[in-house]
Image (tube, rainbow, N blue to C red; front, side, top):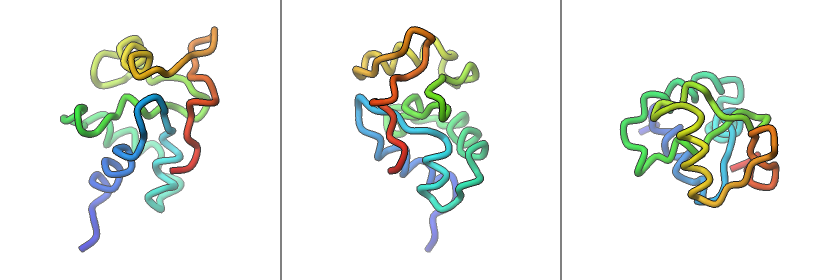
Length: 103
């Protein structure tokens, strides 16, 4: 049986290791829906299990954070990523070496 879209997104996000991030577009491409990055974001916004589906490890393609991060906004997301060891540029974006472009 095929997994539904949400399950596919969550399974892909679970592959992002601590200390790394990926992008909405990379998640969409990984599950075979390369034009569905906004749909990925929507599914992650409604994630109710961040301990098992680390949605805070998903960022925009330029490394910026979502102001609509479901668990408290971009400042909370940044704090969670910094606790994972992710570093940021002076303008507040995730440094490129921490971004996984292909899962």
